[in-house]
Amino acid sequence: MVPAVVDDQPEVRQATPQLREELAREGRSLESATPQEIIRWAVDRFGGKLTMATAFGPEGCLIIHWLATISPSTYVFNLDTGYQFPETIELRDRIAKRYGIDVVLEKPATTVEEYERLHGGPIHRTDPDRCCGDRKLSIVTRVLANYDAWMSGIRRDQSPDRAAAPIVGWDHKFGVVKVSPLANWTKAKVWDVIIKENVPYNPLHDKGYVSIGCAPCTRSVTMGEDERAGRWSGSAKTECGLHSR
Ligand code: SF4
Image (cartoon, rainbow, N blue to C red; front, top):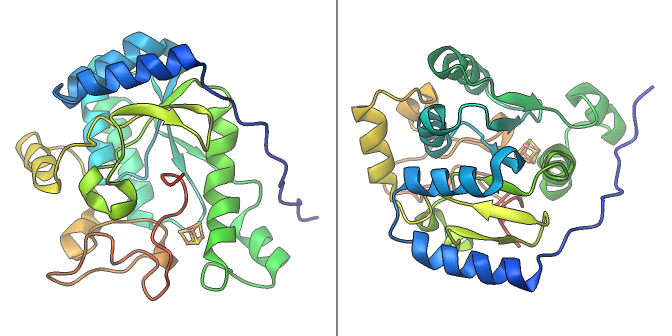
């Protein structure tokens, strides 16, 4: 029996005016802080109610690298859609070995087989918004219901959608605080630290893949192409919806 995909979502929490004021103030002040200082602030402010989501991109791996020293018990999860590259799953194990941080593979309500049977085949080409909604957003909604704040590795210069991302702000979509310690960093700066400090990264980056998501929706890019050109290539879609309002 194939389980039905659950469409009902819990009501989204709202920030109090006091919290909004605090976030605006802290956001301004943390603009000049280092990512480690921002992570430390988030850990001190939210304690066990802070979590982190990662797709094991270079930014996420770098945050885990710092988190291993600052707060290794922070709950870190990955959206295990069932469509990820084997190299991505293997990176999860390398990170666990190196840092002792076991990133939890959080799964959607259905396996890939069940999901494709429900829809008469894969829908990542025909209806990628639905697919991302069912296999990514539903997981984040479920996990974040237990937390007050989440961290992500997004950077403002990754895409126009992310250009205004605050270091700390209210996430209207999921009803929690969102912390982006690398929001004002560049790709070059991220890779500089990864190489210098020997941080584990996805080997697909050495094969022309810049931004890596699910295998069917990711291709390698050529010189001069946009950083996220390899995601949902050939369609108008640019984001899975996690980081857009
Ligand atoms: Fe589905 Fe592609 Fe979104 Fe992954 S990235 S959830 S395969 S549409």
